[in-house]
Length: 234
Length: 392
Ligand SMILES: Cc1cc2nc3c(=O)[nH]c(=O)nc-3n(C[C@H](O)[C@H](O)[C@H](O)COP(=O)(O)OP(=O)(O)OC[C@H]3O[C@@H](n4cnc5c(N)ncnc54)[C@H](O)[C@@H]3O)c2cc1C
Ligand code: SF4
Ligand code: SF4
Ligand code: FES
Image (cartoon, rainbow over all chains, first blue to last red; front, side):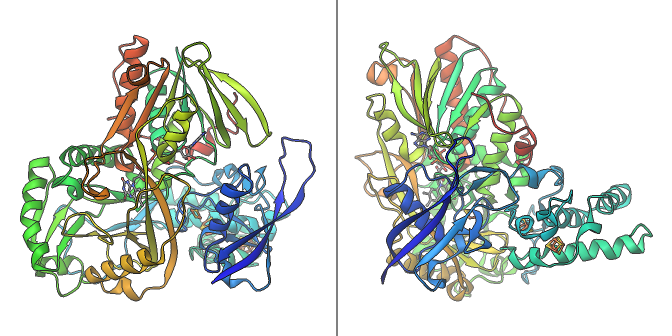
C-alpha cells in the first residue's frame, strides 16, 4: 500500500547565517517504513545535504534520537504507519548542541558516564542446563544505548540546572550493582553530590521516553533509597 | 610526517585512521554523513569465527579467525563473547557438517562437535529437530561501538575526523593526486584539502569515489536484508549447518535477536529497498533453527550493501570471496597518490588497515611496524571526551 506523506523538518546550520526554518518534503512510501527510511529516501532523492545521524537501523547504536511530533524517539524504530494525518514534524533533540538540521553533538551525555564503567553484564537465564566449554558465564551488553532521549525529555536538565541527568545516573547505578567496597562508596558519593540524584523531581519523563526500557527513574529511586540508607541522603 | 587523506568513515576508515596515527602519519578523514552511517553499524554484529567461510573461502576464514582473536583482546567491551553453534536440522546439513568440521580445523578454527542433546542443554530454544551441532568461537559485536573504539583511539592520537564532509572531486591535475575537494554540509562551503596520499575507503561507494579520480575499481555493492525481532532467545550465535545461504543466522544482541540475511547484486549502493519476500524467507528459515524467533514481534527491518569485489568467476553471489584487497592505482591505472581499500568484513577491518598502512609505508619510504595487533583500543566514550570539533 503506497501512501503520500509530508515530513516537516527543522533546518538550521549554526555555522551559517541563515535563521532556522521548517522545510516540508513530500514523498510516496510504503506505509510501514520507518522515519529513518524516509529520511534516507529524502537524502538520496531530494536533499543530499540534509543532516541527521544514524548507524545501526535497529535501536542499538543510539545515534538517531530526535523529536518526532514533539516526542523523543528513535527514528529507526518509529514506523510511519502509527501516525494519523499526513504530516510528521521532525526536530533535533533539545538539550544538546546542534550540529545541523536533526544532528546534535552527544558530548554532554558522556560527561558524567565514566568510560571505565562496564558495558557488559551477565545475560538473563534462558533455561540452559550447561555452559559451553570455555565460557564462564553468558554475557550481554547493557540496555542503555546512550541515545540521549531521556536527557532531552527531563524537565530538570531542560531548565539548564547542572544536573548529571537520567542517563548518567542510570549508568552509575548499573555500575554500582557490579561494584563493592571503596569503588561503590565513590559511586554513591558521586550520585549524592550536588549535580546528582537530589536534583531529580521524579517527573518520570525519562522512563517514558527511553526506547530500550532502561527506566532511568527506577535507577534514580534506587540510588535515593540507598543514599538515605547510607545516611548520605538529602 | 606525510599527510594522508582517508575518504570514508566506516569501520575500514576508522581502523586505518587508528593504524596510521599510531605509525606517526598525519591523518584527515572525511565522511559524507555522520561517522559510521554507511554499511558499518548496519551489519548483523557477528564477530566471525571464520566457520561460515571455511569450506568455500579459506582465505577469508583464516583472516576472520585471526582477527577474532585480536579483537577479543583489544576491544572486549564491544563484544558479547558467548561463542556460536552451527546446527544441523536435515540429513543434508549433517553431511555438510563433516566437511565443515574438517575445514574449520584446517583453517585454525577451534570447532567442537556436540550431540543434539549437548547442544540443547546449552541452548534450550533450539528446535528439537537438531541432529548435531558444532561449537565455534563466534561472538556478537556492538557494530557502532567497536568501530567507535577505533575512532576514539585515532582521535586521541591526533587524527582529524570530519563527519558531514563529502569528497566531491579528487585533484589529479598535476598528473598525480594532490588533494581533494570537500563539501562541508555544516557550512555548505567547498574547500580544497591537500594531502600526500589519498585512501579510498568508501566501502560499497568506493566505485563512485574512485571515479572522481577517473579510476575504475572492481567494487560490487551486494545488499542484504536484516530483521531484528524482540527477545533474546539464545545467548550463542546460531548458524545453519549448510553452505552460506538465505536466513541462516541468528545473532543475539542485548534484548534482540538479529536474523540474517539475503544477498543480491546492484550498481547502486544507496539501493535501500526491503524486498518483502526476503523478510518472510529470513524469518521462516531462522525459525527452523529456533522456533521462538518465528512468532516474535519485529523490532526493525533494514538493509545494507556489502562492499564486494567483483568476481566474474563466482558461480553465485554467495561464492564471491569476502577477503579484501588494497590497490595502488599507480600500478593499476598509472595514477600516483591514491590507494583503494576494497572488500572485507567488519571482523577484519584491523587487518585491512594494517595491509593498507604497510603499503603506505612502502610508498612513502618509511619502515614503521604495525602496532595495532597488541594496542588496546580506547573506549568509544573517549571519542566524546577528546574534544569538540576537529580543526581542518
Ligand atoms: C547485510 C550485511 C550483513 C553483514 N554482516 C556482517 C557481520 O555479521 N560481520 C561482519 O564482520 N561483517 C558483516 N558485514 C560486512 C561489513 O558490514 C562490511 O564489510 C563493513 O562494514 C564495511 O566497512 P567499510 O568501512 O568498508 O564500509 P562503510 O561502513 O560503508 O564505510 C564507507 C563510508 O564511506 C562514505 N562515503 C562514501 N562516499 C563518500 C564521499 N564521496 N565522501 C566521503 N565519504 C564517503 C560512506 O558514507 C560510508 O560511511 C555485513 C554486510 C552486510 C551488507
Ligand atoms: S525522573 Fe528525574 S531524571 Fe527522570 S525526567 Fe524526571 S526529573 Fe528528570
Ligand atoms: S537511559 Fe534510555 S533514553 Fe536514556 S540514554 Fe539510555 S537508552 Fe537512551
Ligand atoms: S540508527 Fe541506531 S539507534 Fe537508530
